[in-house]
Image (cartoon, rainbow, N blue to C red):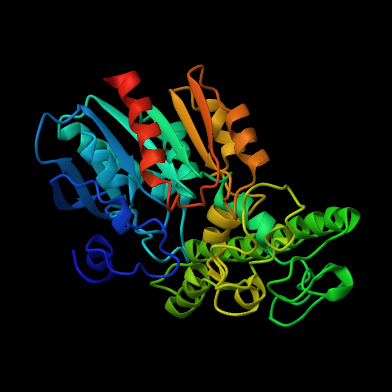
Length: 401
């Protein structure tokens, strides 16, 4: 390993925002094998990662796959802890590593299949799909669409990246081309609506919050409409180019072809505006004020460089970040996940609410279902990782030996 990954493994200060990387206190204190891999998906995409295996003793025939749609999970904290317990891990990155601008969850699911096939090639008899954060909905989608995996484990798995965007997108934006445009009646950062400067907690009226949540989905619908229009325009131009004989009218064919392949990127401002970040009375749990995406004030990240999905292709937005259009929604897929299922929810998570985790468990199609809350743990389980992974390894061992 090199760079930040090596520093994290060697005990250096971890980079901000990469809470899923191993920390010094997570050191398993056993020798492990780490093998870099480069795999090619069925459609020619590159899948990279690390195979983690125990150096001593007999390795289990149950393997775990660990990935996220865009995050580098090759050195996720769970990988060395699982390997130390005897379970080989393929911790890998999809084709969209650190760049989800054109992320299609349906193609990322193919990358999960690629890693699954590699585990089988290496002797796996059972494969556990483990999803942390946005990895949960990716693993569920891969299971449902491709029938892979003998168990599903969710660690702080949110309901889906699109669903998550629906709760954090700023509905007060009135002009998608103006990052400072605002409807004051829908502005969670307006004192008239209950906002107070960081780090003072805020207090939002419940009726206002209902309107706010509705307006968030209305903004998502408007962005969806822009995305679909762009796709339709390109599709029409593609049909036109097919109707033109390029040998007879090369110029006309070329103009139509340009319109067909043109991608007008969506710039989506202000995507870190969940009132629950600043009002602890909303869905109360053990979480602190703020968001793991903010450093430290969500206002700064909402208007500055933070947030998510800031630049997207129309199809990438619809597939990954739309609360209304993305198919990577656990509300839709969990009913079809009938393999043994474990969901571990950290109650101090700033991003996922307890009622959301409970709803994910309730929608599961598994008869073998375990839902466990870990009190006081944050989204990436810092300070609670050995405890969380003991839960996971004991659960796997009880089912697969």
